[in-house]
Image 1: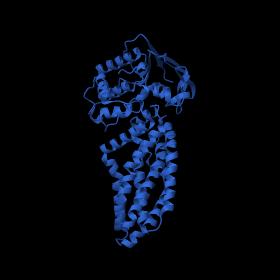
Image 2: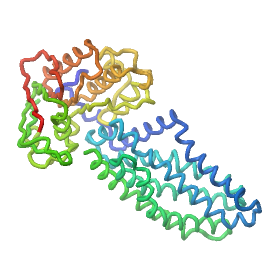
Image 3: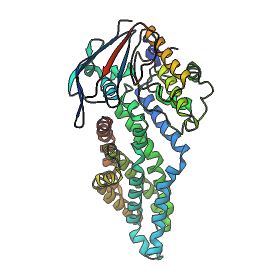
Image 4: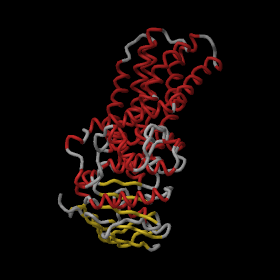
Length: 238
Length: 209
């Protein structure tokens, strides 16, 4: 049991890349459930913003229905941005990222796992809560499924793209402002296509086209974002 | 097991505007301890971080087993264990969860192994406690338990005795001694040399640059 050169782990003791990523994912989920207020924060923000609109503009459902897609998406985007700051910051502070970079496994996969965990904890709950906010804004029942799907894919793309900016701003002392500035331009296409898809869904028209564009962004994020984030994390560790 | 060696030649490291390490050379082999001492700001941490590849080398070369580490960085990382200033532990996980998620990246660990390693660092019974409820010294011991389980031949330890009581400091010396006797290598960065009962101690004193 002593750590010796002679007692290097044997080959079957070494977990596969997928096991390692799964372990990192489970770790983040378990941590998040110990600190539930951090999950609740973006959700509360989203709920408050979407319920303030009817109070501020008009309680008439037909008029609210006009602005509902925009309100839902802007609120979701800002809530997701709010949560991005926590993506890597805590792990950078306590040396976890250092250990990730030094464990001899692919940092890209580990960051991918972290980003996936982040989405499960922020984007997915937002997408699941959105139908209730949508109904409060006059969205018809047939559109609720569309709202969930578009927001789920959109926030996934956003988490991935945001991971790059979150990693890039790790070295700065107060990165929050910079993080938003860096992420917003990249998030605008997601906002446009997402809001459009939701709008079409609410008018009971086909929303496949903007949804596919959203999915294309997500695929682009899946393939490229963790690579870029890993490079940025390595720089921040210097 | 073939003889392992870590060698650094002509190492130059800059931290911002400061030229911290100027043409440093070092060498450690299986069974040896290298104790790096020096005043605050002399570059002990920078040296350790450069050795494990976290810091960019402006010039120079680090070789592990005779091969430049840049040829196989992942393989080099898999054979080293780096312990920085702060133990890499999450306050909201228990001690054994922390070890499982940390060591688990390298090798499969089972609960009895974790319990055994916590006993080896005189911290039995801490396994189920949240790290936020542990004292700084207890956290350090938990990190040492993780270090043991990593089973890496090369230890790079930055101030491993910080926050430890007298018994804990002796424990660190004993662990390093066992590690090198079994053929491992250790590089420690310390203010005061750690008492290690071994004939094969090398010393490197860094002057403030």
